[in-house]
Image (cartoon, rainbow, N blue to C red; front, side, top):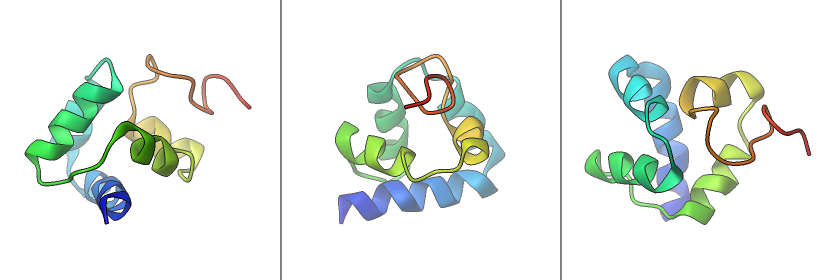
Length: 77
């Protein structure tokens, strides 16, 4: 269930510019999750990472601050 919440959040972010900017402004995954929880999306860091790995490079760049973590668009695997 919580895995689905992460997926739902990413769909909502595509339509909500304010949420998109707020999430991109965060510096770490825990802050990202806290913002998501404030909006009713409950998931953990592992579930977030799993959903991030499913995103295209373009979608990832619109949601995640490129400064945190080892993401595909920064450090290809």
